Structures are given as structure tokens and as C-alpha cells.
Image 1 (tube, rainbow, N blue to C red):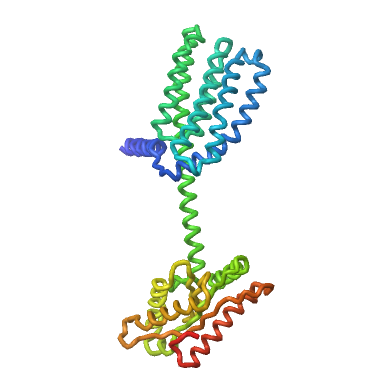
Image 2: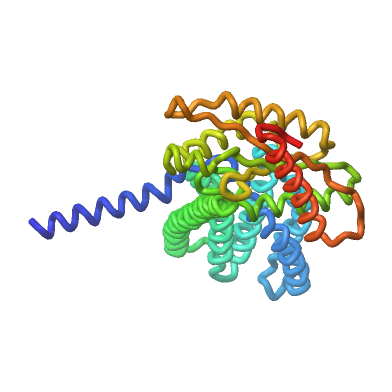
Length: 382
């Protein structure tokens, strides 16, 4: 019974493996990536193959009079390769169906070359392997469904077998070639599906890894409690905006503020109450601050907003909106209310100042105004 169970398990595993390589789910993005990758290879291989056939043409007599086939391929290559090259250059703007057709044309030309040389040379020697090499090569580069792949090989094989009796008179040899080509076409199809399945899974894994890296990069940039930019990321954004301002001549402003009497809030309502204030204030900032502005937790209960392409007066209106919105926030404790104090500063366009000093200067200027707001009674911006 154990042996029968093991056999059944083995059959199931084989079935699942075959199903996974035959039925591969791909979206348009993955197919396009595969087309782009293979087109890039074919664009490189094409000229090499063309030159190789051109050189072989000089020795056509030694190649069992296959010169006509070589000439046919050279002529077809002159017409098909530009289509392949154009598809490679314009693939981002082209429809998938157009890329597929240009890819298919070249694929058929390669299959025809292998079949033609093989049949022509069979009069003198066993050159079936030339056709089979072409079949294997095409199967490696194929980007299509299992059915489309099978139809392509089946049609080519059918034409090959129909023409075969004209070049092989020996019935026994004819039968052997038929059996070999059928078996090796099937194996090539299976091999091609394995390669395709492997490529698809590699791209899927690559996509997952890229998303994970983006997520990790975001986590590194964000403050874990509030989800806003952390101190280092906010400082880096300021540096970037300074460089943009120097290059474009456009101003930018920052708002630096903190929560009034936050130490008292922690003492009166506990750190849980303080955390609630930070989280709800951060959510409000995310909702109130316009898009394309940068919001960061600069440290403790201190926050910073970086506003590109805005002068100080425009930034002040945003600061007043934040201040009024903060007063309206509701917390678990009905006795808990907050106000904000801050400073608004516009970047000084003076050039020639080192980047680090320029960054420190604008933050320091806003910080001075924040302290003035505290001195003049809090709950205000200077």
C-alpha cells in the first residue's frame, strides 16, 4: 500500500509540474518584458547569424549545395531584421500584437532556414539536426501560450514531413527521420515551456523583490509612529529643494512647529494620551496639507512642512489652516485639546553658500520664529 501511495504522490507531483509549465499565467506587463528581453537578444543575434550565413555561402559546394537556401535566408533577413530592429526601438509605443507579429516573422524565418537546409542536404547526408537545432532555438525564445507554441511547431513539422519523401527515398530512413523529428519536436516544445515558465517566474520574483525594496526604502524614510517623513528624510528633502531653487530660481518655504505644552499633556494624560495626539495630528496633516508638499516629524513633538514653489505669504495661509484644524481635533479624553506654535520661513536665494549651511540656515531661521511664537503667547505662527 505504501508503494502504491508513493506512486500516486509521484504521479500527482509530475502532473502539477507539467500543468505549471504548460499553463503559465502572465499579465501584459510580464509578456512585454519577455518580448523586450528576447527582442534585445535577437537584435544582437540577427547580424551575427546574417554574417555567418554570408560566410557559409562562400562554401556552398562543401555544404552539399545548400546555397539556394542560404541565399533565401539572407534575402528574407534583409526584410525581416529591420522589422525586428524597429520593434526593439519602438516597443514602448507599440501594441503587444504588433511586437508579437514582428517577433513571429523572424521566428518563422529561422524555422524555414533550418528546415530548408536540412531537407536540401538530406539528399547527400543526415542533416536532420539542422532543422532540430532551429526548432530548439525557436522554443527557447518563444513568448506565447502553450497552444500557440504547439501550433507553430506542429505546422512547421507537418510541412517538413510532407516535403520529406521528395528528399529521402529510403523508406526505412524516412520512417526513422519521421519518428526522430516528431519526438524531438515534442521535447523541444516541453523544453521551451520550461524555459518560458522559468523566465515568467523570474520576472514575478523580480517584481516582488522590487516592491519589497520600495517598501523597505519607504519604511527607512518614514517615522514609524506617524508615517510621516523622519528627521533625516525631511532634511534631505530640504537639500533637494535648495538645489532646485538654485537651478530654477523658484522659491520654497518651510513651516516648523510644535505642540504647545506637550510635556504637560504627557504628564496629565500619560504617554498613551501623548501618542494619540501625535498620531491624530499626523493624520490631520496628511489630510490638510496639499499634495506635492512634504510633511515630516522633525523630532519629538516638532513637525516640519516643506512647500515647493511657494513664498512665505502663501505658506503662512497653510500654517493658519493647520493651526485652526489642530484646535478642532478631538481625543479620547474630552478635556484634551491642543494648540500649535510655529515659524514660517522662505528660502534665501543667495548663491555660493555651501549646501549644508544653506539647509541649516533656513531651519534655524524658522526655529527662531517658533520660539518667538512661544514668547508671544503660543497658539500662533510668526
